[in-house]
Image 1: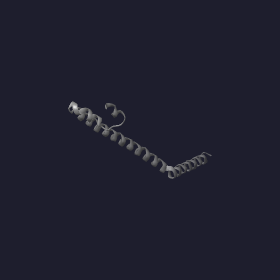
Image 2: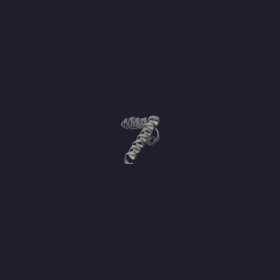
Image 3: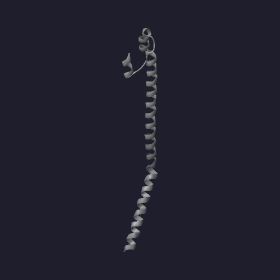
Length: 91
């Protein structure tokens, strides 16, 4: 009796393993796509942040350069700065 139960347990385990591997073969590509989407999204987000930092740095450099001009031309130089959002507050 024990030998038969052991055989049935082994067969059941093999069937489960085969079903699991079949599911991985069938749906495993979804995991790969999910990982690629997450990594791609994180890369895009970091690229966006670096672009925003570069724009902010360029705006800050231009603002500091305008502030170093003589008082008579400082206002016009600050007014000519192009920016968006909070950058427009210094006008």
